[in-house]
Length: 114
Image (cartoon, rainbow, N blue to C red):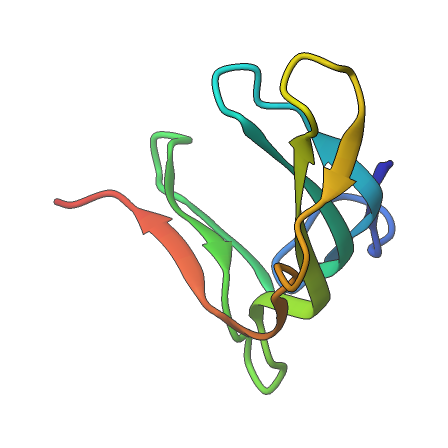
């Protein structure tokens, strides 16, 4: 299950935050022998959006805003490998020892080059 929650109120505005909560979220990749199950939270903090005089978005993303922190922040985000064993059987098992847990983050901003 994946649930995206907007933590603002009124209209979307700079500085707003979102949380993406993943609970046993199975990514079935039919072209690969290995799928993934995701768990944890991704915080999208410090929404930024700049619109020019022609009503075009020229900058959008998540970054620090004024004195508030911002970015894409991983909070105990776990990626667990899942394989069909034996192949074609419909029986799936988790890869042993294959569950990195990510904490930390980065700023992410897209902008128009003049």
